Image (tube, rainbow, N blue to C red):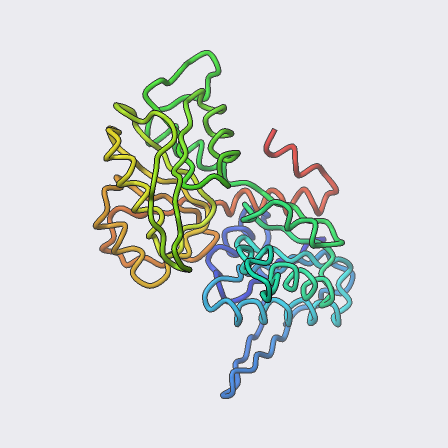
Length: 318
């Protein structure tokens, strides 16, 4: 029998997941002491149960991560049969390799922490680098938002996923070389074209668009990526695409970190729309008209149901 427990980073998302699984969230008490320490108490018996702990490691990243580790330890000491850490957004994923001589690989450190705390399985979505799965010695289910975004694209933009229909007026754009595979999968689904934005990043947190590879003139461009953080890369890419003659540009990005004034940047940009998932709680003010969320909670709920019943998770995306 499954038990779903929510952390504090995105409780609304956890509630949606529980509803899809036709269950209720296990009541918990999370206490934060005056010095910042966290205490988690599970208020229901979970002995011998299949426990799913739902918490994105988003801002504040370190607090969310520590909360997840404490939740895992709490479940382990409460004699749960199997503990699955459900992390729709996996924080520190961008630190997946050494960027200079004396720098850490923090994505691997986080993997070690989760495993040592007692997690038996990880459920996440659109890891920044797929090879992060190899940092774990436990099963990792890396779900994809592509199926959810594709439905929204069909409904909002009017495209169809018919392989016999060539939508020559649409191009899927990757904002960097690392996301080409993602753009190609979208393009294959809708039989569209792809393009790549070649950017140079002079220093951390800043980006400069240099070149556009591919034809976007007189086409509707759809930018696809895994993370939007400061919004600088996204807005610069959108401007480069419009300057190259595109009819419009919108973006579908899985994780809306949207730090600092990112929402305001999007509002002032040439983007027609930014669509993100609810892997991270909505961070934009209500007056930001260009940004909206689509929910991936049902997808996670279905994955959790399949894990519990020992069914295939990968068949969700075939």
